[in-house]
Length: 443
Ligand code: AMP
Ligand code: GLY
Image (cartoon, rainbow, N blue to C red; front, side):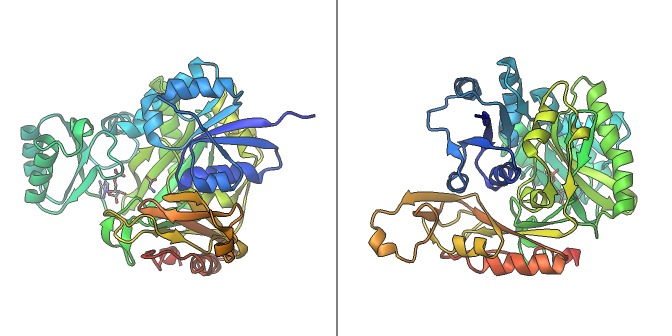
């Protein structure tokens, strides 16, 4: 009998659920575990690590004990903690950048200095470690200006300040009130850029690379990009209206290749998924930020368009002698739209414990449903739940701000949008909110 390959996915959000579905789409027989995973991943046949895990060393020991062949790390926090270094030390194959390379996200000061040194286009900036010199710089440059905590701040660390007073208040919040804790010990202040944004995912072994279909996120909670910022309310791909083939060629030449070369030269060779947050300014494409991992919710819109053996692709990136360029890869010529459904109150505190229905019905419409803030409990009285036809007879309830994402494809963007919304309409829970204009910018 042929042995199955075992994979461990680290993380438990919509992105990790999308990584799981992508891995399972290939013909390869896989046995997939997740830590911590989520009930949607479990529903798709993934096993959740059912043991107390104290730290990443502990998880590496678990992976050794369970003969894991490949570990795929989803979120930035474990990468910034050095999970890849820990797993590698144990001889485990692991997809993701080392702690040193993950600085490309975990330290904006590192990323900005790298771009400056290697001439990679980005906003003009200075770095500060105390308030007075930062204030003097803001005063000299004038508003609008962007103030950023250098460290990881769950996507909330960049503040676009319209006035000098706003920038002053922001610097006081960061340096005096320490709203970002140690992540705000170093601050990057930069020029405000303007233009549409796009997310470019680069899968790389450090030298060779493959560019995934370009995506566009929708960060504000409300239609027409109104209301507060969120983790992302939906995405579509490819966003060729923002980054066309000619622009992408420029991005490869001016940003992707120089970044990989720079990381190699700095002895922080980058293996894994490099996320380039782009702004298409009047002066051409510039880097807003790098992330050391797949984006959420962009992944839920991008991966359904890529046909490849993801086990092979991740392994080639992870392996010291791997070569991603040799991996067979086919991009679907259509579009994919992912609509995030959130709980009432998001991005503030969202209501929890609301029963979610219609997941099967949404899937019957050829959509994928990716769980994020969802809890599961076994149904005790099946007689009273005749209408409950969820695969594994569990009740799913809301357990977080972003509850789930619904992705659907189409030959055209218009069709993909219609398909995603038709499927999303099947899913119901009290107080559900979602944007009605995901993808509209791309039309
Ligand atoms: P970041 O945390 O660096 O990704 O920034 C989060 C968001 O803030 C970006 O997606 C942009 O919308 C905005 N932003 C960051 N830097 C700038 C900048 N220099 N100019 C204009 N907007 C920015
Ligand atoms: N969607 C934005 C991010 O993943 O950072």
